[in-house]
Length: 70
Image (tube, rainbow, N blue to C red):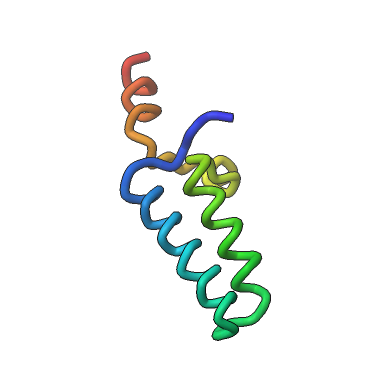
């Protein structure tokens, strides 16, 4: 599993995931907050997004630099 989520994107995903989980815990949003929050948080923590792979997006600078070097 190669990293395809980098820098600002990763921080934003972690923050958004934590906010959604907090909102779900305080019952301000439904159960979808737990599910989406966990998925978004996991993609930030592991620096990998399956959807990015599917559509060919990569925000990880290290991966982009090695791709240009070839």
